[in-house]
Image 1: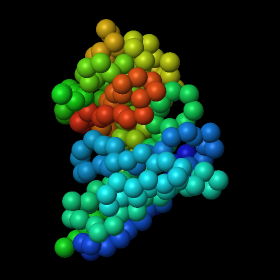
Image 2: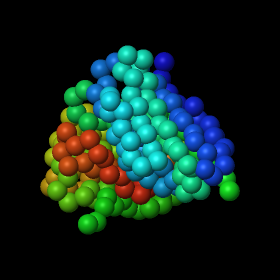
Image 3: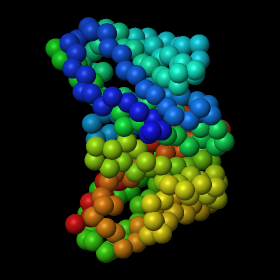
Image 4: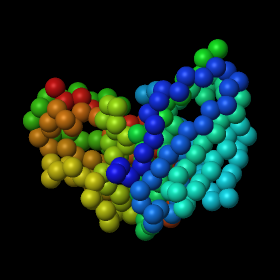
Amino acid sequence: RKEVEQDPGPFNVPEGATVAFNCTYSNSASQSFFWYRQDCRKEPKLLMSVYSSGNEDGRFTAQLNRASQYISLLIRDSKLSDSATYLCVVMSSGYSTLTFGKGTMLLVSP
Amino acid sequence: GAGVSQSPSNKVTEKGKDVELRCDPISGHTALYWYRQSLGQGLEFLIYFQGNSAPDKSGLPSDRFSAERTGGSVSTLTIQRTQQEDSAVYLCASSLNSRGKTQYFGPGTRLLVL
């Protein structure tokens, strides 16, 4: 089983739609969780951290289920500018090496 | 302030040649990371530095790969006797310290081995 698994997509949605991405991780000792965003031919940038209680940042909501080792990202009212690849990222115990999923591609169309 | 910078931005080399990739982390960041992203693949961890020491080199794919960091700042990733499968984008990231959860990435070096 891969350490961090994501559906590669692409997810094609119209502007204004709500879309959700899921991610599973295999290391039960993982301590911290993130969603990064990567635009085409650009470097990854932190979108948001994921907390056990769930957290929201504007149109973005992240959830963590430690028992199921599952992370989700919900995007409401999609914008054209949301088109990107969303990377699920896990930090294991010890120092802060990140393990990345392969990403889920989102395409928002007019 | 200035972000993470990497050079060169693009590198084309012939199989068998050595290449050096450079990373300038954000000033004051003590932790530095190298990753590799191949076409259609996720980011692959290569090596981590805390200060000038590398506690984790487990991601280096072969002994042709090495990295060093001097003065707690600039890092160089060296690939000897390059192979075509080394073609990828090499990304450097830095964080404030080893407990820093936010890693800031540089723009990467696109390496093409012919």
